[in-house]
Image (cartoon, rainbow, N blue to C red):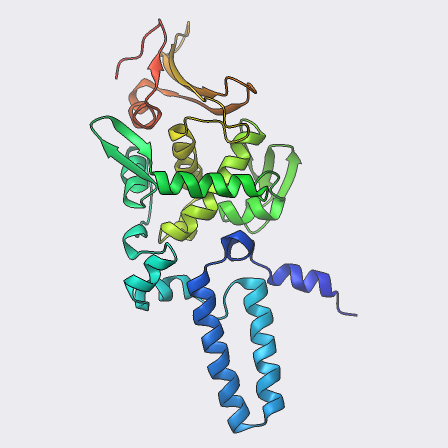
Length: 284
């Protein structure tokens, strides 16, 4: 006997459905489905065409698209004016193959999610609104294991605690708090539509981009109160000093970012954080 719920679960792609659904991609695929159904109706019968159209609509509903590669095809061939009406301007989708910490700021600004000037790097107002809208919708508040697997490009994901998951049975990932997890879940849905090549990035590269965005926040993803970021030089008796960067909500006391790195690798993170050093001092 066919397990219908299991089949549906395998077909579903949360990365391209629900709040993540791209309207231009959906429109293109429905048009393709109509053309395909019309051709079958002419070559065969009206019933055949109607059944084919129904199957196509189910696939679009579950997967987000019918034709593989639709997001790339849509950006490449639809007019810029039409894409801009849906917030999908080609200017907002840089193509990247890899991301290093040194390149985080440039990737985020190229994607239109951040701006940079003499005053530093900041979230772009339009992206901040989209990010907060996704957070307010509640869908990002408690992502499932499947959502996390899709977000980080894993075939399998298992939840082992409130904020920790095991990817593909071996790699463990953990967030500082439920607020940090919700922030990444909401932000990843936006980055996927703005960065061409997102799906090819490694887990660590995606997490670096998402942490970089969290460092740009000035308000808590959960309660929206002030979210100050501080940097501290951490002395150690038997190893070189390190730099600790923390963003903790003043109201709910949830940590949104906790990053410890070597002094040599701290600059890219400090650039995004705009962090203020405490009395111990951090040379920038």
